[in-house]
Image (cartoon, rainbow, N blue to C red; front, side, top):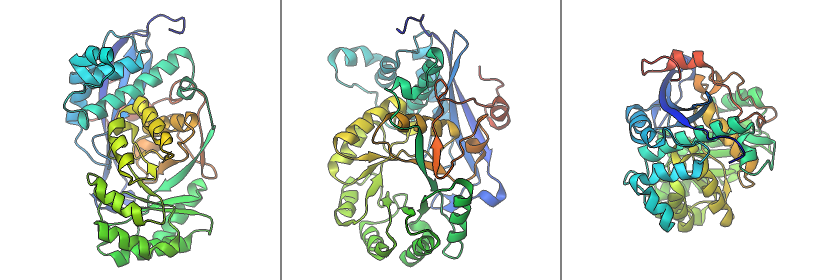
Length: 400
């Protein structure tokens, strides 16, 4: 492969991070007050001394217990990988997915996943997969987007993802986002956190009033509305020209999502809590989604996100990945957007958590609402080890 000797995996490590948020940057939503950000870095080190980084998440929100996820990385999956060639990413994905039946799955061409195929196992698998792509890119001296076929874009539009303030302050909040990154697209949270439909609509109205006529405004209900509430919200916010309505109804009720989309005059987005191409197949075929939102740290990594994007493209759906995570996850999103035609925009988290802004030597800062795709090998990132040592919770020292 590529004329180089095997890239032998020496170790796979899970590094849990817990990053407190500053008192003035602790949003309140249906998840409660978010006073910290938790995530799991995954480090895959080869015998050659190179280390690739990925990210796995136990929750779509900011706070989570990471012990079971770390155990899935190190105790369930790592033993399958040590000594294997890290360049064989697709085969390793299938090995982690099917476990002892991987040989049968590859021979027959049929998936034979373990019972925990959606949830902790696939999130752990995805973090490792992300790190393998980073590691392989470093080894051959190419960014991941070139390994995926080369760039279709070198700068990616991003939207400011935040919007928790009440109607009296939401305009001020969005103005601060614009001042930071020159954004022309903004997302606010709505739903059960508002307490009433009237307050949710008032917040959307105030947000639209604060924006320029050509700015995009999105709303995310976090799956907290009933079908009737979602329909009423769409009717009441029609004058404010939402660019998309995200997760209006509970994520496990695909029929409810289809009912909402049937009457929606704006695109419906969903998928941040879904996993594997099989889950996204059902999401698309049910007819409830216009914009597909896989999270590489939850759905199965870069490998599976590429498959999901291909599936979405075959059904003329665009992909806007869910990237509420650290800068490592965002780096993976950038590489995917650079290589995949229907990954048209990325989420840029505005919670101000340190794992997004301070984890890397070179942070991702938008200019005029776009972020440049790094042309460096792998994910194009350098993790600051002093940051890792400061916020890790496992009592270890060093990546290994």
